[in-house]
Length: 210
Image (cartoon, rainbow, N blue to C red; front, side):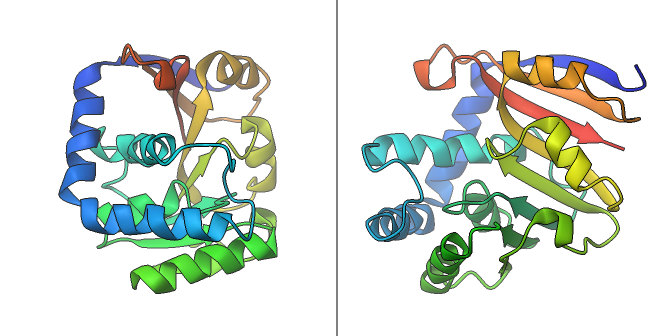
């Protein structure tokens, strides 16, 4: 096996910091929730049975890599399989000095997130309606993706691309099984959430670096 794996347990202080970061950016993040839930009535972006409170927790969930210090070293990020803009739009709001591309191969979803971006006035965000395999990445780009790909599939689709870091929101046990099937020369870190809250049970982050 060519890749190395490191496991880190993340305690509840990180969740507290992510919620504080949400509060600091609350007006724009709450406007994002308004736009997302409005568009969701027209195009299925998130489950229509889910509450606003749960969607808000998904936004907090999206901010965890920021408080873990995982995103400061890269200036341009692509959110692949963005769907309704998670995690890319919340990240672009709290990291407004960085450039974010929202990428999905479902064109109507990209139309929706383009509308959301315009409504929020996010000048650091652009959209890409195509497969990640067809996107020309700049050297050193970071990739974020929330429950959109299996690890091996994303690595295959981006095999020849000059990305620097991939951050994936995953269930930890499933991620461990997926990692066993990776045969690339990749450094892998698993961040397992130990928050004591049902929403985060079994969840974590997978960070891949070349």
